[in-house]
Length: 409
Image (tube, rainbow, N blue to C red; front, side):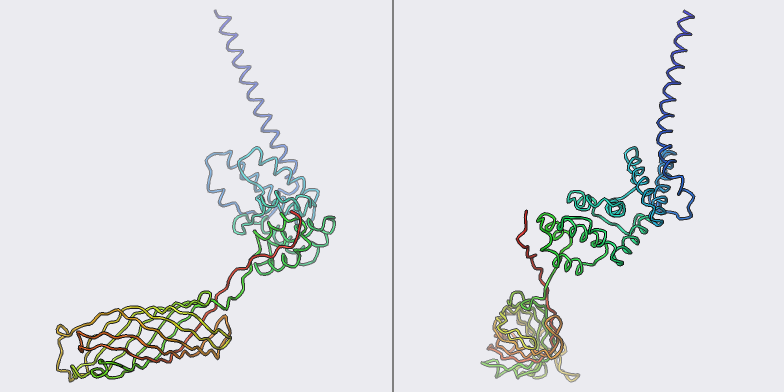
């Protein structure tokens, strides 16, 4: 029995020794890879920004991963700045090996794409699957190595070295595809769209061209048939019919805001006028309308615009005080008439300032609308109105589709 116990203890000790050696070898293997490629550049004064990672510290293993990532990125940054391409390639290989054994990312998507250029791997830059997967760039996240990579690439672009190096790509479509993708990190929407337009006939591979258009190309043009406008000014109203015997012609205000889409005209307006009346001569007759004008633009030139419209809405009329000598101070006994308003008119705009995109001027408006005032002055009729308004107009843009040449799919 005693012999069995001793044998069992010996077997347990042997098993524990074996397991510890296996883990030690794995750790040594990974550390040896890190030491092999990082040692030359580890003593650097440049610190990479990994604050987002450092705030998570669940274990010493995580901290070790963070230190390893920092060392690799600092080393790659220094190799890049010293144009030490051989060391850079070894460091990239080490980083990729590290990523396979760790959940921590060393080289991010956009960085991997730009590194392919500096390592001379132009084949990957021409590969649509590779580019579409890694073509991402986030300037605010990855710190010093990220910025160094961006600055180095920008220098290549400004100096003309980028296009010169890409000349080694024999296929014209591949060469232009890679050139536009790398320019996409530095050019704004207008420049990259113009570059695609300029080189679209050289991009014989239709899938490459479609990717560039979907990813970068944006173009819009001013659409003269679309605009937003606003106006405000003074009006004059003439009463016709029975109401003209009880309500005098009057001055007022007219204000509107609307839009023109494909020359169809929609405007929302508020207008009102105040005048004397014969029913309660100690009070003013007050009428206001909240209405919508639906119409069409018949003429639209650089400095003139002519439109006609139909009107529908709600009108309200009542009385208002007529100075300090009013004999009727109580509003409770003032009748109020609410009625449906309808009519039509036309507007002529003159724009001496600006162009289609932004222009300002005067609007001359004239039209006719009904007026119901049975509860107030016991009469109804129609009213003719004219107005002179200040008008501003903002042109709208529309996106246009890319004109694909006849290329291979």
